[in-house]
Each structure stands twice: as structure tokens, then as C-alpha cells.
Amino acid sequence: MSQLRKVALVGNPNAGKSALFNALTGARQKIANYPGVTVERKAGRLLLPSGQPIELVDLPGSYGLDSTSPDEEVTRKVIMGEFPGEQAPDALIVVLDASNLEQHLVFALEVIELGKPTVVALNMVDLAERDGLVIDPAALASELGVPVISTVAVRRRGLSELAEAIAQAGAREPEKRHPHGFLPERRLTAHAIADGAILSETARHRLHAKLDRVLLHPWIGPLILFALLFVVFQAVFAGAAPFADGLDAGVAALGDLVRGALPPSLIRDLLTDGIISGVGSVVVFLPQIIILFFFILAMEASGYMARAAFLMDRMMASVGLSGRSFIPLLSSFACAIPGIMATRSIADPKDRLTTILVAPLMTCSARLPVYAVVIAAVIPQRAVLGPVGLQGLVLFALYALGVVSAMVVALVLRSTVTKGAASGFIMELPKYQMPRLKDLMIGLWQRAWIFLRRAGTIIFMVTVVLWLLLNFPRAGQGESQVDASFAGKIANGLAVVVEPIGFNRDIALSLIPAMAAREVAVSSLATTYAVDAGDDDSTQAALGEQIAARWTLPTALAFLAWFVFAPQCMSTIAVTRRETNGWKWPVFMLLYLFGLAYIFAGITYWSALALGL
Figure (cartoon, rainbow, N blue to C red):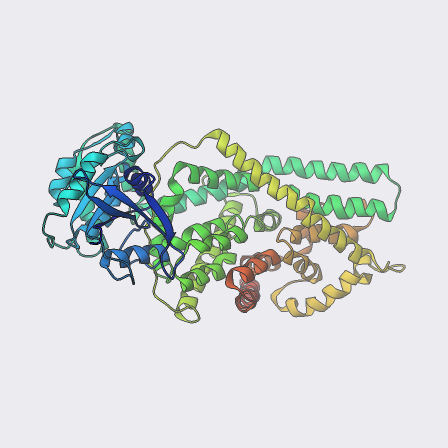
């Protein structure tokens, strides 16, 4: 019995291959894994117009034949006839998304150049027409040198024409075509072919193309991205100030209310100096968190965030990473935990490990309260250039320092412990659209709730423990309570280590609970100063005022530098252990981050002293 002819469906992810496969084969299909790999193999039987059956195989989505992910490697090996026990396909069906023609043509050109009998299925033409894009299949076929059939798989349009083209493709002799060289040349060719095949497009579609020409420009694009980020950090301070001041006043009023309603006692001190002062000092930064995430969510919903990934790909390639690392690192601006988990999409193991190790250098939202309270305390609130405020400029510089440090560390790692070549990066760009207000509000509520839940659980518990350590044993007559406490004795021991970089005992004490959550450094300082002040109303000042009065500018700048590099919360270390299957890399992460934190805090402190600040 002769073996059935075999035809393979290939194309980019999201081209509609699976829908077309299901429409062509119906119930005549079977699913299993390829031998030796956990990649799904979907095969079915298609009846040609002559009644002849053929085997149709749906290969995993791919952006190129030189890719390294398991899915794309299977696709390459099957197409090239290199997969053990797998018959090479007699013909190929390249599936294109008509609404994203230029991007999908890049891979199509690479496949057609192989010289195998090929048919192009121009799929989802209905969606392209809905967006005002009309494509001429004949012009496209003329440029590509292979048959092009318009299809709408979900509506079963064009299936009989496609089956007829498949039958005829097998009857023609394979022909070698002129190669289009490397990826940049194929992209230029794809652009020219797409332009020639488009009969008409709406003003909206032309506008989107013009936006991409500007926003993805190799020089103008990064300038726009950094200018946008600069505006975001200016807004974090300027826009949040009235709301933060209102919350701060509310926390102070609540403390005064409890202090006036209860007689002097340890319970009252726990409520006022511990819970209200400690937790409240973190909650007041909720407006900054909301403003920051408003911009992040808006950029994601508008389609700009994916374009930012492409802009960052060039910079990341220079340090041995790729644009695939951008999304996990971007997620780490919210929290390193989902950022580290998102590295699972990176195929190259060394690329993935490097991304995990540098993710904590991205400035997570937990750092924002620390930055905000110190900047507000020691940096004057004045404009330096028009509406540009000095405080927002310093905040932007801290975020930029985190990004630059991550890139430098990645370069060092890729040259040493994770040495290897950078992997390629292709990502489908979503359409531009106006963010929906409802979706933004839901996203902001979710992130605000996460922040408040941390304040009500982790920060609350750490604050209570710290208050107990600060209040026992009780101080004798004329003795400072902090000096007499367990916490004070621990801090005095640690202060010896951090004193050379400008840190005092109170700062040393705040560094320990900050390992539970970054924001706890703020609540720790607030609790320490509240306990130290006791019932003296003259010293019951806001945390920012306490820092301004007790810290020198070199110490404050060193404290900010420390938090740019210091390891994130213990949950991050735990996730790193799980994702790397051991303690080797989490311990390495802790050591190198603490080392960088100490070195750069020291450099900042000594430099500030030398400059006379």
C-alpha cells in the first residue's frame, strides 16, 4: 500500500492555521506528541477534489527556520525532512494573516525559497476588509511565484479552491527561487510586496502605518519612548502630591484621634506608633502607585507596549539578550515575581537565566514608596526646566539607573557565567486602539487592591513584630527606648557594617524587615521614629520631616542608591529557586545584588561628601 502524500500547514503564530486545519480535515484528525518532545502533532486526512486522500499536518507556529524554541525547531526539522521517523512533506501551505500581511510575508518568503511545492492561503481576509484593507491575491501570487488563495477558515470560504491548488501544486516540478538573503533583506522585500498587493486601505489603516514609521524609527522611536517615560515619572510626583498629602493628613488625624481616645498604655502605643504610623506611612503612597500603573496599563491597551519591546531589542542585543526578555523585565517594574515567571517564554536557557538574574534590578512598585518619601524629604520641590520638576527628575534617574545597571550586569553575565549568543526576536504587533476606560479602571483596582492587601498583611505583621522588638525590654530612667530594645541592639551590631557607607542605626534597622517587602523599610523607619519620640508631641512629626531633620543629604542619596541594587523580597528569591530548580542561582543573585548595593551606596556617599553636599 502506497504512502499518502503529505502536506504541511506552516505560518506565524495567530495566522489561523489551526482553524484552517480543522475546517479542511473536520473529524478526520488525530493528535499526539512528536517522538521525544512535548510538542503537539496534529495530523488529519483531506480529500482532494479528485477524491484522493492526503495527510495534512498542522505544524507549530514559527517566525523563522533558524529559531531555537522547541516548537519552532520541530517545524524546521519536519519541513526540511530532518525529523526522525517523520516523512518530509510533499507540499506546503503557507498561511498568512491578511490583516498583518507584511509581517507574515517575512516567514513566507523564507519558506518559498526552499523550492518545495507551495500554496499560500491568504487567511482572514474578512477581518482585513473590516479594517479597510483590500488585497489583490493575483498580484501577490505574481510577486511570490506561487498560487495564492483567499480564505476565511472559520466561515469555510475558499476551501475548495485551496484543495484544488494543493492538488495542482503536487503536479508541478519544484523550483529553486532567488533567495532574499538575511532577515533585514526579507523584511524590505516583504514590505515592497505587501505595498504592491494592497489595492486600497482606509485613512485609519494608513494612519496606523504612519504611526509605526515614526514610533518604530530606529532613532526617533527610542527618543519618544524615553520622553514618554520621563513624563510618567514627572506625573507620579506632580499628579499624586495632593492625594498623597490628603492621605497623610488622614493618617495623622487617625493617630491623633486614637491617642486622644485611649489612656497612655502599650496598647495605645501599638496602635499609634506601630500599626497606624507604620502601615499608614506606606498607604499614603497609593496615589503614586495608581498613577504609575495607569500609564503602564494605557500603553499596554493601546498597543504601544509591544512596539516598545521592538525598540528595546537593539539595546538588549548589544548586551546578549533579545526583545523576548523585554516583556518579563517590563513586568518586573510591577513586581519581579511575575516577571521571573514570564521568562518561561524564552527558549534559550542561558538567555532565560540571565533575564531571571537581572529582573530584580528593574525598579518594582514596592520601591516607589521608599524613593518617594526620601526624595520628598531631601530633594527641593522646584522646577529645573519649565514644568520639569527636580523631584520627578531624580525619580526618573533612579528608574533609569536600574535599567542601565540591568543591561550592564546582563552583558557581564553573558560574557561569563551565562555565556552564549543572543537569540533572535520576532513578535507580532497588535493594532493600535484607544484604551477602554472600564478596562483601565478594573486594572487599577486590581493593582490597588494588591498594594493595600500587602499593607494589611505582610507590612502589618512585620510592623507589629518590629514594634514589639523596639519596645522590649523596657528602657530605664533616662534611657532611650530604641537603645534599650532588642531591635536597637541588633541594629547597633549591623550599623558597624553599614556605617562606612553613611548609614546610621535607624537605617540599619530598616534594612532587615525590608527583605520581607521593600515598602516595609518605610514603615520600619516610621515605627522606629515614633517609638523614639514616645509621647512627646513636639517630635511626633511626619516621616519625611524626621528624615529631613535626622539624615544628611549624602546619607539620603546613599540610601536611594542602596535600594536601586539591594535584593528584592524573599518571595522573589523563592520564585527564583523554583524557576532555576535549586539554590545555586538564588544565592548567587543575593550575593551579587548585596555586593552592588554596598559598593554603589558607598560610592554615592563618598562622592557626595567629596562634593561638599
